[in-house]
Length: 223
Ligand SMILES: *Cc1c(COP(=O)(O)O)cnc(C)c1O
Image (cartoon, rainbow, N blue to C red):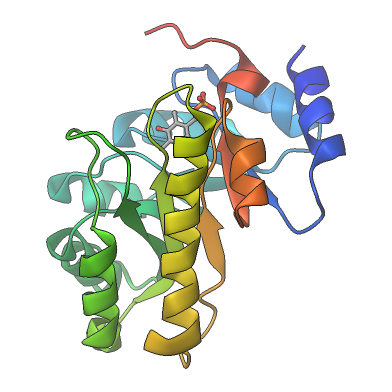
């Protein structure tokens, strides 16, 4: 089932789109099934879960962290072998902690800045204006062990496709202004992570380079 779901999605994806298989709340056996079907990149949203799951998978499994990250869990997260990307940097304070802990651990870490565009109070992240200001101020130059690889965002949770499209469009436009004008010298700033099970085709149309799909691969999560 998992391998068929995966095959279905992958066979229709344009070549330039990276698929993150979101395995949160699914057991290591399910992740292994997807791994055996060829998937290598997995997304998790809780530090405790990723810490216990990662050792159960082959070494070349690549882990992405996509959930809200508490500063007191950063050191633990960075100890995971093959942590490739943190999507969910939602404050300057968190970024500073990640950078400090990465220096301490003697590693470098790739991250995305989370943009908040959705029409919901609860979603975290920087506003478009905050990110653009942060980039204009060239705050990224002070980072010692952290590389900003791009942006991540979510659309409003709604059935209104026009609204979803508008949200993804805002995220991509923000990215375009950064690479086009605000900080064109930023190197390897090449990831736009947006789109989940119900809305990733729209995200791709609006310029996603990376999508995060859970339910359509692993089935419903049991909370
Ligand atoms: C859970 C989650 C996803 C995957 O959601 P599905 O609807 O299961 O595809 C993607 N991104 C983030 C940030 C998530 O927390």
